[in-house]
Length: 405
Image 1 (spheres, rainbow, N blue to C red):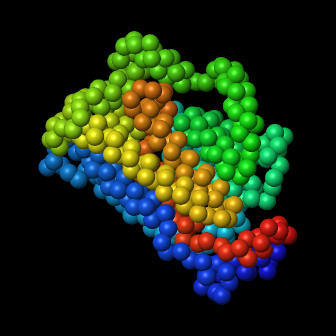
Image 2: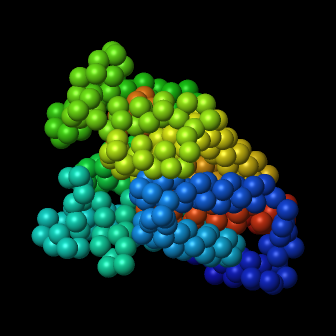
Image 3: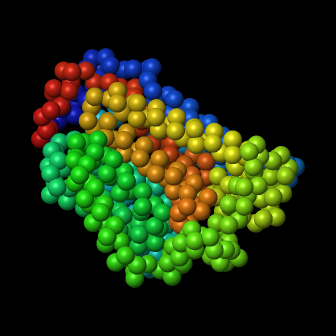
């Protein structure tokens, strides 16, 4: 690696006289993304409290307080992620990727005590850190985006069909390990992000469409390796699409209950007291987590649910506007990858809530309860702000065209 190249970045990124320090842009689209992140997090705190505290007298619940702590940690992490110049992240991309892979492998080691890796719903996806549980699949998202952004930055092979093999292999490792936990929800988020980053880096759309067609045709071959409860989830959603209420008290209970509560919100929702009572007596599983959007719709109705979707749309549009303004390919591809992770996760979670996709355990970013999810979501927002704050000039871009040795 060219040490002079690294030194110039550090000098410019930390107040030196280099070109990075001359292009600090305090006014940028990323602040809107950060504001939307905060608004969604506040909505999430209230929705979690509605789900966990059965009466207003018991508010705030312990879960709500813990989520507030997670929010503070997440916001601090976002500011930390925005501090150093984002171009420095290229030098930690591969190490972070390898560390995340090592953690995912650790989860699958059979002799690790359950006190450290405690299975949840049959999945080995969390490491007990004492004060909180840590989900390596969450931070693997960021490590993957940084690695892929750096990998695509210096190459043009991905514009050819055979050049898509290497990016596919980089994605296949975390996807395979997360699938083995098994966590189909988290695993399903990587491929859309990969495709979006490839498009942003100049890959041809027809090549990606061809891959999607081939993967779709080969998908039935994965049926035998799915576990029984995973197969039942897919069968359950198919039954719903046919209009059957079979499994409404069994495998489809969570889905039907969530849909019933969404409908009970009508256009403008219910009172605080009624919402807490309805959530309590309908016994919605994971109301504070995977199904928190149903609680929001129950409290604020179709209008409130639509406003939450509008916040996510604002988040994504502002993030992509930041990518549009970023002339550095690494920063631009990074933002696109992070935005796709959030966007696809939102669509899957809401699809689960309203019965359009199988329930595969995907949280609602910034809103659902969970320390790892909150931390990762805010780190993504912080990285987008990082790229928005810094705009390299043309001389810097010319210097960056050569690959450092």
